[in-house]
Every structure is written in C-alpha cells, then in structure tokens.
Image 1 (cartoon, rainbow over the protein chains, first blue to last red):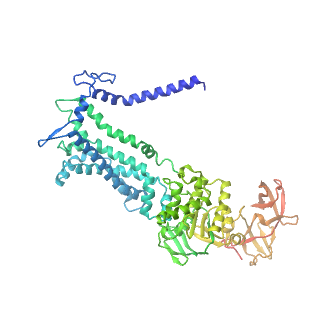
Image 2 (cartoon, chains in turn brown, green):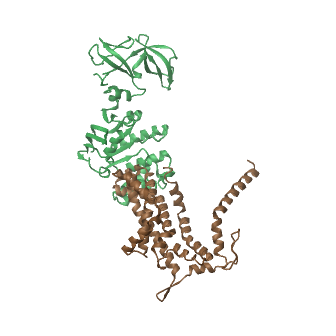
Image 3 (cartoon, rainbow over the protein chains, first blue to last red):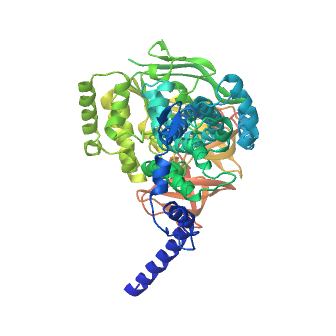
Amino acid sequence: MTPLRRWLQAFAVHGVLLVGVAFALYPVLWVAALAFSGSNAPEPRVLPWPSEPTLAHLTEVVGATADDGGETIWIFGRQLLNSLVVGAATALVGVLIAIPTAYALARFEFLGKRRGMGVLLATQMFPAVASAIPLYLILESAGLLNTRTGLVLCYASTAVPFAIFQLRAAFEAIPVDLEEAAMVDGATRLGAFVRVVLPVARPAIAVTSLFAFMSAYNEFILAATLLDDSKMFTLPVMLQRFVGEYDARWEAFAAGALVVSLPVMGLFYVAQRHLVEGLASGGVKG
Amino acid sequence: MVEIRLRAVSKRFGDTVVLDGIDACFPDRSFVVLVGKSGCGKSTLLRCIAGLEEVTEGGIEFGGRDVTRLAPRDRDVAMVFQSYALYPHMTVRRNLAFGLELRKEKRAVIDARVAEVAKLLEIEHLLDRHPRALSGGQRQRVAMGRAIVRRPAVFMFDEPLSNLDPTLRNTVRVDIRRMHDDLGATTIYVTHDQVEAMTLADVLVVLDRGVVQQIGAPIDVYRNPANRFVAGFVGSPAMNFLDGRVVDSTVELAGGVRVPLPEGTPAVAAGKTVVVGIRPHDVRRDPDGTVAFVVELVETLGSHVHVHGRVGDAVFVAAFEGHTGPKRGETLSLVVDRLHLFDPETGVALR
C-alpha cells in the first residue's frame, strides 16, 4: 500500500469514528452548553456552545444550602452523600446476596432449581414502578419511609436478580478443575471458593457491583415516592425540583445533571480495566 | 507406606452405573495406569480415589486407613489435571506454594521447597510469571511441580499429556516415570493412550463399562489377555480376530484354512467354535505357511511395516520388521507363531 493510500484510509476511518462520537456526544455537549449559559440567554442553537458563559448555575447547585430548624446546612452535600451511600449500600447488599446464590445455581443441582430461576427471571419482567405503592405501604408500616435504609432495601431487592444472572454466568465460566485442584491442595470447599473462585471472578463482581451502584444512583421514581424530606433526597430527586409545574430552570437543571454524572464517570474511569475484562469474561478460557 | 485397596467400589449417577464393584490392590510405590476407552469410568475411578467424587458403595483404603468418606484434603494426595488447573490469578511461585500455605507450613520451609522443585523441573525462570504467560509445556511442568512440592503419599494424573504436542509428550512421559522412581510415592495415572499405558505402568488396569477387565503387569496383559476386549484394546496395531473351529491340534478358519495350534496353546475341546486372535507381530512370512494373506495396503514406519489385507474374507493386519514391504495385490504365505482363543459368546480367553 502506498503512503498516500494508507493516509487516505486512516483519514476515512477516523472521519467515520469522529462522526459517530459526535452523534453520541451531541446531547451531552448540549447539556454542557446549557449549564454554562447565562439565565437570560437566548435558547441554544444548533451548535452546542454556551452563550453569555457563566459559572453561576454550577455554583448555585453545588453550593445550595437549606434551613434545618434554624441551622443552615449544606443541602447539596447531604444529598450527594445520600446518593453515594445508597448506591454503595445497594451494590454491597445486592452483590453479597447474589454471590452465594449465583454460585449455588452455577455449581449444584437441587430441587426447584429450574423453577426458582424461572421465578427469578419473571420478577425481572415487572417494572419497579408497579410496586411503588405497595413498597410505600410496606416501608410506612416498617417505619422506614424517608430513610436511606428503606431505599437501599428496595433497590437491593431489584438489583439482586440481575446480579445473580450476571454472576452465575461468571461462575459457570470458571472451570470446576480450579476448585477441585484447590480442594486436593488442602482447601475446604469454602476455602476453595474464597481463595480461588472469588479472586478469579473479581472482574465480573466489579462489573456487577458497578451496575448495581448505578441502578440505585440513577433511580428516580421510587426515590421520589418514598422520600419527601429534602435532607433525605438523592440527587435525581434534587434535580427534578429545578423543573417545576410553572417554572423550568433548565440552566440549573443542566448544571446539576453535569455535577451528578461526575461520580459515575469517575467510577467508570477507575473500573474500566475490570469492565472490559468482565464483559469479555466467559468468552475465552485460560 | 501407601498401599491402595479398593473394595467393591461402585459409583452410580442416578440409574447410570459408572463403576461396578471394582476390587483391586495397588502395592506401595507402584505406578498404576487406568486405561480404557472414553466413558469407561477410568476418570471417575481416579476422582473417587482422590475424594473428588463420593463412592456410592464400597470402600477405599490407603495403607490400611479407611479414606472412603474423607475429603480430598485429608487423603494426602496430589493431582495433575488434564487442563492443568493452574490458579490464573497467582504467579507460578504462589501456585506452587498454595498447598503448603494451606497446610500452614513455615515460610522458610515453603520457600525452600518451592525453590527445590522449581530447580528440579527447570522452571526457576518462570516463578514470577502468571500461568497465562506460559506455554502448554511450561504449564504442564508447573502443574507437576504443584503436585510434587507437597510430597504427597499418592500422585494422581488425569490424562496429563493429552494437551501437549506429540514430541513433547514423549519427553514428558519419560520425565513422569523418572520422577515417580525418584519420589517413591504411589502413582495412579489415567490415560486412553495405550502406548502411555504400556510404557509407564507397573500395574495396568484395563476398564470397560465400569468393570475391571484385567489387572496385571503390562507385558502379562499383552501376552495373556483375559478376554477379547483386552486383547483388542492393548497392543498396536490391534489384534486380528477370525472365526474358527478347533479340529484335532489345529484350528480351522472360515474358508477351510487350517492353522496348527502353536506350542503352549491351551487344550480346547475339539469341534468347539472359537474366536481366534492373532497379533500382527505374531505372524511370519514363510513359503511353507498355511495362511494365504492378500495384500491391500502397506504402511512403512521405518523400522517395520504394517501390511493391511485379507485372510479369506476377513480383514487382517500383519507387522513385519524391516523397511521394504510386499506389493499391493501380492499373496503371502504366513506362519502363525502364537494365537489366542476366545469363547465366541462370552469373549473370555480359553486357557
């Protein structure tokens, strides 16, 4: 191939990729442009570029305070903490329950295994919203309305089935030989699980945790139903308050959306190596 | 001292009988090879002895100690898996040390043993690599190292050479036998390759459909197979089987060819219908031979030739020394030096 042709080919490939990236990023750029635009600025145009650039909305959202019985508290900080705690706890509880379940489903034969899997799958077919009212009543009678614990319990119960299916596939992809080798080497069944299976499944566990975290971190409807104290709000509920019935503050909403997505972006950045491994796991052995 | 005794070991999965009443005794320090076709139960038997599979009935003893219900880790065995089963998240060094760490050995002891085994197997330069960075042959050595480092009473090998290329297979086979002789443990080795079985074994166990067909020294099994299955399975090329009838001191093959019974052939009632087994190496070209052999195909192996053809209507294979074979279409006269007689119904050798 001549240098010219190679250059043309690279040009074409990168051109196509650039168009693809622009297509995917356009809405995000638009939100970013909106977030940095002045309040009285004209509506954004085709090109996502801020008009009357300002950081006012960003500082407003991040610096939001509220009055708490005569005391002024940093409400945004509270809500960010709520979101992070609820997300992390959901991931922890969900994955801790899913790991032993998924392992049992992957390795053992027992009565009701197939039917149990069917039921588990069936629960995935109902939208979580369908159970919002019953959940509200249950949490109310348990005294868990307006608490992070209540929210975590609801989220974990929806995260568990998905996590089980993810992890079962991951455990099935691990050769039984490895566990047997560990048992011959002197480990108990539990020891083989802890020392060999879990470390080998680590990428899959990381991915599953991340998904559980995100499902909780992003969830809006249940949170909006079960929480009515702004101190207990998670970030999606906080965001929604910028868009009311009579008044839509889109610039503040956009600024909030940017801030809210930062932790998730950070997590993905840190976990990307595991993510690639985890998503590819099961395909190739050895 | 670990003599392994199996008492009527049976294994069933639901209605499927995998092992059916296996009795055997393997002397201390012997190299035992379990051989048979795939699905004959040899791997299951190995796994039962290792404790990875529970026996349905019967018992297993190691040196007089009943281990039937013991977990693998309490049996003092080590195993080399067909897939090697190296821990992918550990370096070679940690793979080797794993068993010792679980047994709470002192750090200094572990380091010394790992170093010693690494030197023995010439894998010192690989100690800090992960298994994924090793070739097949290197992985195989690490798997052996992981077994040796623990100094177990019993070594188990489950088709350890099947993932290696043929040249490497021969070298490693010799290494395994040498290692067995040096270490003085009892070894149980599963294979479907009868060359491995013949060359490695002190005690050969031929299995078919979960039943022991014959146990003995390889050469005894080869020379005096207990039944038609063993006769056909052990030896390469496989033994020829022809229908025949015993008449006086000869056996008459289909087509009326009479073969005198060689000396040492057991006396069998005259007139009895039999299956005649003749090993390809037990025939000779001789102008006075009574068996007419029509040549159809000649395979040259260098040191000898395998000649495929027909005796009467039956397919027949003969092996001759030397490197020049007969021509296709030629008819040879053969003398049979040794033959085996089997009961046509039960397949049992007539002795």
